[in-house]
Length: 264
Image (cartoon, rainbow, N blue to C red; front, side, top):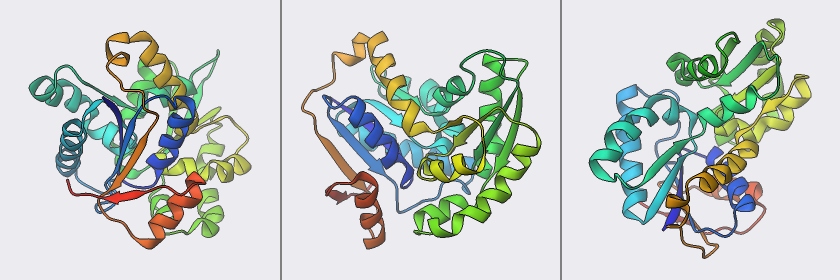
């Protein structure tokens, strides 16, 4: 059985590349809901509906474990999917998100007092990062900054315009003296170098931390790991395929990947 990886757009490709590089022995199925990107401005009900469709697709295509590589979906629907969808439909399978690994990584070490979160508006409004950070470290102060323009810039090849917009988004976090910064959207992994040039604190990028967290999870859960097939394959599927998306995916991965068009 495969490891499924789901995202609404491009950011999940970066996370997938990190996972495949770290754990190349397994078989993977990546699903990008590019037809309905972005999720960051959708209602909670719509996100639940979209995610349920994606999960069903991946489980029906032989995935034992699914990584929701979309912070908006993780923030809004992960817990409900784990507590309601799985027991009713696939009780022996598992769903993981990227939000908790980010929170844990931001608080590693001693004495972290202020953590910044750069995320989509709906992720910020959900309060999910703040809840997780305070659950781990009740005394930490969390400063959240919505960044609604970044996903459209990433999706539309607008990275050359991002520096001044990033500066505006990062300014309040700098003023508040954050000691760590979580990039709370997988799209922002593609901007991590620009972010690190503009803020002098450790920056948590999910394509860098999720692979190790997944490896640790599989070590601790042999009942899941032993069910995974080991063919070393990665199948990429998207719900809409444009020329610009295909070109960006090739640049991001550095290889000639076969993107297949599919329906949910």
